[in-house]
Length: 294
Image 1 (spheres, helix red, strand yellow):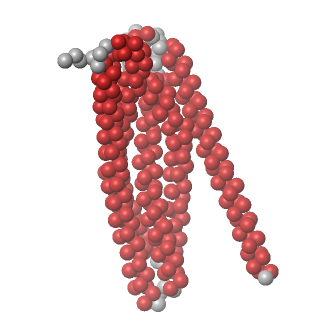
Image 2: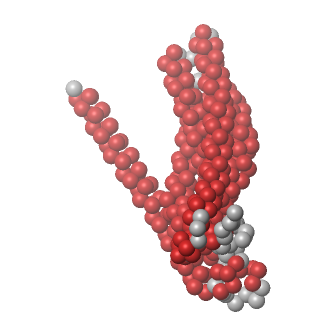
Image 3: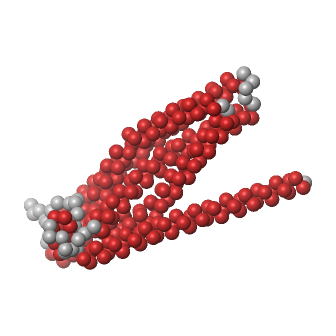
């Protein structure tokens, strides 16, 4: 009973230490995100107040609202979590790979390195498409804000023209459907990545199982070590898949930082007004007030 009490006491201490480190991780992640978002928000506000009037004449309001809303929210919450998840996965993969090689055989490092290269290749194929889809999603979201904001400013005009409300609703639905189509494409890409990663993970587990059976029959590996090695191989494949997802997500979230910086680099004293205009995402500002009569 004394041994059991000592064992339970050790578990309690270990759980306490893990809880403290998890709390510190969450606290510092939140602190980093809050400071980063506050820094960029203050710089955007200062830059907007110092921007020339030509900037507001050539820049749709939807772009500005998107950066102050969705993009700064990603910098505040999603980006720090993605960075913490990438570091966590890297440490877990390294420790699990060393444990697996030590428990079964160092030769297991060869298929693990091969699996890692295949995971990297799948990520390399997925990243450009995911990056372009993220950019397309943000570009198709900004016109929705612009269209809605223009409708709020021209509500009286829209209500005074027969059929204008239906025209505005039809245009708003078209913009929303375009944004949802990009979102569906992102989900389809995500499903492709899931299938590819699961296929690679199952192949790695199968290789570990074959190696465990051969070494156990040869008497070079104990059954307990073989079972533990299979458990670790299942864990490391899941970690590799999660690491690939976090890396691609981190790259997508870093694009939000790039878009936020577009508003922080404005110069009110720049003689060339083309340098203070952000990239156009919606041509023909004022489409919300354009009504086509039969």
